[in-house]
Length: 551
Image (tube, rainbow, N blue to C red; front, side):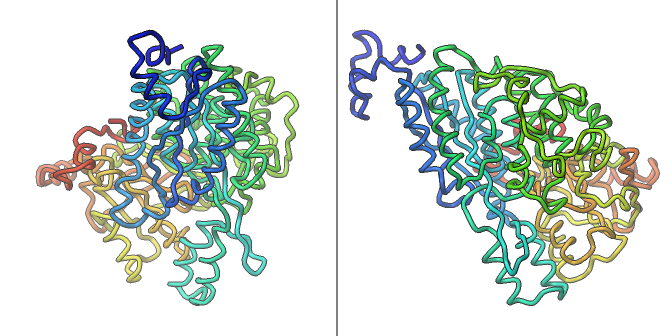
């Protein structure tokens, strides 16, 4: 065992003494040492229930003959950090989390890991860390929140809060109703209820085979989640005995399975960043071209909040990830069979899967023949940009409008709040990319305000920043090259005409090459906004979004 490096032989007497100080018995000194990397936090709704899951995992590890050690990693709530400088830390926290997992597991020579995660950047950060150290690992995602309800209106965090602000500002609801929605939209622990980034990544982790079946969709407050946590603890000891590592499970076929499922269920645009970063950590040849290729083939067969009414609770009842995998496998569109951490391969997991076809449509009867996500190219994004097609009304697949430019999210928000954005406008929010932000902030506040004000089908928003999985409307993000790297998004002027064509996956600034070159010569060199601290280090080392914003 790896842990023999810290516990075997006369020279390790000091090490054993220190381990005994933690409570390890002489008998358990010979057991596999299993780390539980817990992202518990009182600050993050998706993580507040993890103390209970830690206990269940620990029980499972000890029942299986292992010795458990809990250690902490940071967690950021994107919803709480949204709309202010705190959001600059969200995406960079992914790499911080990966570093924490790698550091603790290597420093203490752990034999295996359970990674207890849930929200947006924590799950991919943990996956990146797991691939770096490549020891037996299982991911336990803590599960989605139950939906809220007020006066028989079904609520989710996005519709009950962010979009409610827009409705209030436009006079659709009064302040009393706004406060009612605020209080009832997030009724339990768990990740936010729709197919936002946290739940997208939980589903894709299960698709990859790194979580036990139904882990992604089982509610955070359910007994089933507690049982999955316990069973994961049992199973990790068996994986250590088998020496089954992440690299034995995650490969190009695995990641392409994840991309196919992502497109078929209309997941978060952030998944592009995370899958590319996971591929990089594992030395796997997956690029934006894989997304582009598959995005022209895959139909959308699941449609959840924010693009529709059903939530993760409904998806779980409809059969969850196994049902989605069975639907796509039966359609013979490229889902590959592979090992998973539960001991079964994909075909064995899906063999008896229950499918409610009202929510998970048959592949030949999709919600739309278009995928949930798409990549656009053109002179405005020569290296690509992304959009959540499932969140766009089909009547808006071809959209042309006039640019209104803002060099920060705050400037755009002020214009929206002051009613300076009108039908036909295309909001440009730039210098918010990985380097320019720095940190590539999510633009959920402005996109939700647009929808809440009734402008979701008459205005568009384009940014080199990114979006929450809860975003809907004509929203284009991850524009590459970003403004800070001299991308053409930096050259746009107020009044410029821009054409977005979802059908042909094109996005073009209707300005001549001669004029763009003239503007480029007049463009001032970008200066980093942060001169010290973590964000300064991040901005100096981060790559662009088309490479997963890796550092």
